[in-house]
Length: 221
Image (cartoon, rainbow, N blue to C red):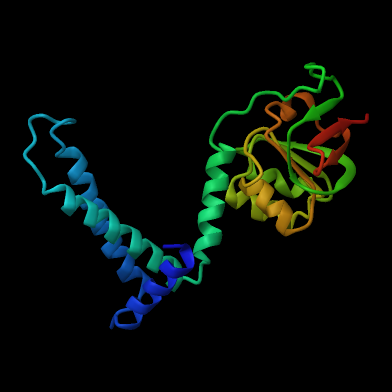
């Protein structure tokens, strides 16, 4: 069964339901997830002293119920399931959670004035750098019309960065589907993520060039 067929079957099932509230669907989903946790904690291979919590068929049904109710929540919330799944897989493959190591050039060296990261949003722009601590949201307005350089961009910080009209985003951590990268693409600004140490190598007020397609930052002066 492909995603389109699954979505249609979920929509058909929803048509017969008197309660189409996604919150109600989420309640069913969480109930099934709770059952799945019980199957795990009552697995005698994991916990030899535990009594059984149903058969493998019961556990299989719990997974299936959780999956289709989760799918139903996406449908009811107007989320494209295929797009959501692809984004989730990209995020996983990108290892956005993992600490990044400094990127090296083709010769294997770390150049003093060139910082290499992950190409996350195309475009080339020059400007003054504003180096921001990841725990200092109050200073984001000072980044107005500058290039924001930070360890990572929290979701609430991303909104403030857009309001400050920053020219580009550079981060130490994250990847091409991180919050900073996604916000940059949505607003058509260059972004290089996963540089590992941009906040250490770029100083406040440095004049830099950001190439979001090549994944490079050059410290010009």
